Length: 298
Image (cartoon, rainbow, N blue to C red; front, side, top):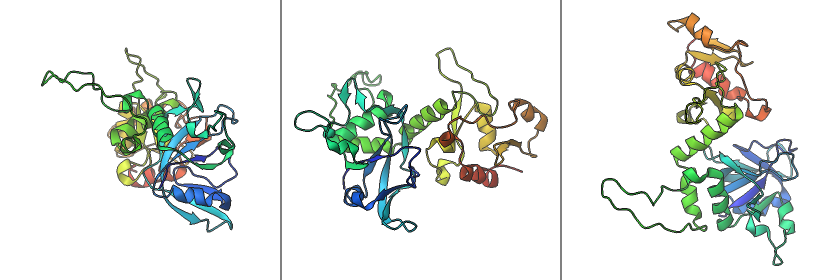
C-alpha cells in the first residue's frame, strides 16, 4: 500500500465522481494498484483557471476493470472516506513546492508532475493533509495549562513524516464536520439557502450551519453536493422533515407542520433553494430524492 496523487478536473473527459470513483487508462494501472487500500490526494492541475490545487482526499477501496469501457479501469473509493479540504492547498506554499517528491536532483520540477496518477511520499502526504485541514484541526495545543493539574507537557516539534497520525484525523468525526462546514458555508456564501438571510455575529462568525441532506448515519457523504447552508431553525425543520425539496429545488412545506403559514413566511421570495452558482456544488438529485422519500413528512 502507498499514498498517491490522482489528478482531476471538473471538465474531465473521464467518468470521474471523486467521492465514488476515478477512471484511468491502463498505463496507470500499476501505480493505481499500489494505492489500493490506502489514501490518495486529489489535485486540480495548475493550468486550470482558478485551480483549487490539492483539494480532497479519499481512500481507495479497490481497483477494477471498467465494465463499460474496454481498456479503462476504476479506482473505487471506500464509502465515507472522501473529504474536501477545508483549506484547499496550492501547488506552492510560501514559495516552496508542496509536493517535494516532484523535484529532481537539480531541484527542478521533474516530468513526474505531468502524470495523472503518481506516488506520494509519506512526508508530502502529511504536509498536504496538515495544510488542507487547517491549523485548528491538526492536534490539540500542548502549550495550554491543564486547569485541573496546573501542569502541561513540554511542546513537541512537528514531525512531517507522521502520516498515520494524519490518517487518524481523516476519520475523526469532529475534523470531518469542521471541514464539511467550511466548504458548505463557502459554497453558499454563508447565507441560509432557505431564508436567504446572511447573519454574522459580533465575532465575525456566520450564524448558519452546514446540514447534510442525506445524514451521515445513513451513509451520506461529506461532500458539498450533499450539504446545504441553513440557519439553526431551518436546519431543525429540514432534519425533522418539516421542509423538503422538490426535484427542481422548490422548497416544500410539510402538511404536518403545526403552523404551515408561519413556515412559508420564512422561505425566501423565490420559493426555491438558493443554490450555489457552481453546478458541482448544487444538491445532487439522489440526495434530494432520499430526503424527500425518507425524511420529509408529506
